[in-house]
Length: 300
Image (cartoon, rainbow, N blue to C red; front, side, top):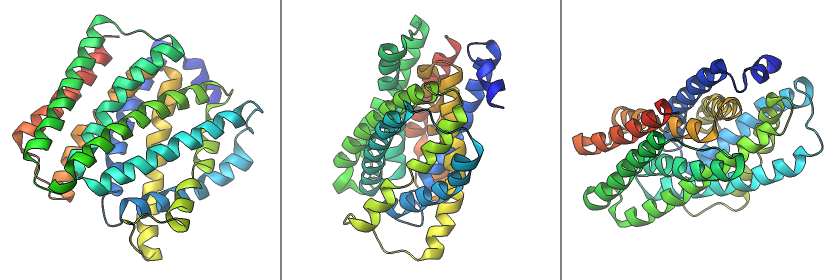
């Protein structure tokens, strides 16, 4: 399967598969984000998920895929640092703000920074139409942030801090998307990167959660952590795995932007499962974000 995927790089078939993988990642990432805002506090939920996907990745990393080349170990070290920063800022944002406030801003800021990073690192260039799409997406994001700042009633006292943390998390999203794309392209077998990524990435958040627990972390039973950790790990593997493969098959910026259609899925999840009121104005702004992603994809 590795040879087949590598053979699709730079082809029309690879571009089509990359778009499908990015859309799958969008749906699954919305589900993944909701899991961190559900039955457990965000810190414990993330730690439970990380432990679970580390255990799932272990046999594949050690016994199935080829071992990483020597030059990959410094790359993995950078991956671990960047992802820890992302996880900490995201957990803090979810603690401070409502899901419908935090999630769209996080996912919307990421592509803007990613497009710039991909231009510098991979020499990718957007067409005029694609830049229009980025502008539409950013208009939706800024409009949503302004709307929430004025009208949001949930966790009002921490709303400004939640929005600031959401922007910071979005910057980390761009950083890990670009850097991970560099990492998965640096090894001969993309599944080597994926297996070792999930294995090595599984240590930092559990250690932080249980050795230096944040003030907002709450006790949880083992059964509750398993109920969140196991399904969350499956979703994480397919979500992150899909977008990483998409960035190897096609342009990093396009994959990152298309993934941000996840805000539409996130709005539905928040309404159905969390009872959070979306409203026509906020829903329209989220649709504007999704429209921007579609404009970018069709303009390439």
